[in-house]
Each structure stands twice: as C-alpha cells, then as structure tokens.
Image (cartoon, rainbow, N blue to C red; front, side, top):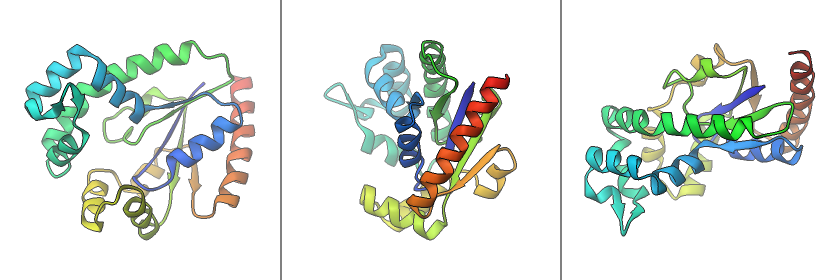
Length: 196
C-alpha cells in the first residue's frame, strides 16, 4: 500500500515521518531525494540550468539558495521547476517502493495536491498545525523571515482545501499526543493493507 504523508511548510511532516520510521515503516523523503537527483542526474542538471541559468549550480553543486530565491515569488518558474523534477522523483520512488518488504510504505512529500499527484496514492495523511506555530517553527529551523515563510505558504494549498482530499489528518501541536496518534494510525494502516 502506498501512503502519502503531506502537509504545509512547518507542519512537522519530517518529525512524523521519523515516528513512522521508528515503527519500522519504510519512509521515502521526496525533498531529500529530489535534491540528490537534481545534483546527480545530467538530464536534470541540463534542464534546470536551461530554466534558471548557470547560477543554479555552483562548482557543480546544486545552488539551493539561488534556486529557492528564484522560484519562491515566481509561481510560473516554480511550476516549471516542479514539472522538471517531479517525474524523475516519482519514477525513483516507484522503483524504491517495489523493493520494500512491508505492509505499506510512506512517501513524505510537500506538494502532492498542487501538482495533481494525489491520485497516485492509496491513502493520504495530512499533517496540520496552527499557522502561527508553523511560522515559528520555520523561522527557528531555516532562519527565514516571517515574510519569506508566508511567501512559501502562499505557494501551497490551504489545509482546509487539502483536508477534503485526505484520508487521515494529524494535528501536530503536542508531540506526546502526536506520537499516540501516529501509533494508532499505524495500526489502522496495517489492518487496511491486510484487507487489500
């Protein structure tokens, strides 16, 4: 069974992904793999350089800061970049998933709704948190300004819109409560995969 774990920036997807991994669930971090593929695939490097210019790579390394500054306030460029990067990541994930020996696997991915990728999954888990808390988390984690965080949030769908298309919602405010929710959900998913 293929399960998506998604949520807006600062919702705590990665924290929850680690909780599932600790329960023995294979977890694929799309963001990390996308960066690896963007750094190692000649085809991707060429396409990204054509889209964003030579500065997209510095000393043959992915210039993450330059890229995020180039696309975050430019929805068209962001969409074009996603169109280049998402298909190879999807392909890589499918290969990875078929090699796992588990009742279900999780793909942690930030934007499955925005790029119409949600139909690919058997179940979708949405992670939410109050906007104020999400902003505080990202400011603390990335050293970004509140304006930068809000600009990134504006490129993502609202939680309300995502909830309508999600099978499960975890509100991630208190980690103790979240851990219990994850364990309960893990049992639900194990039962579902046994039935399918």
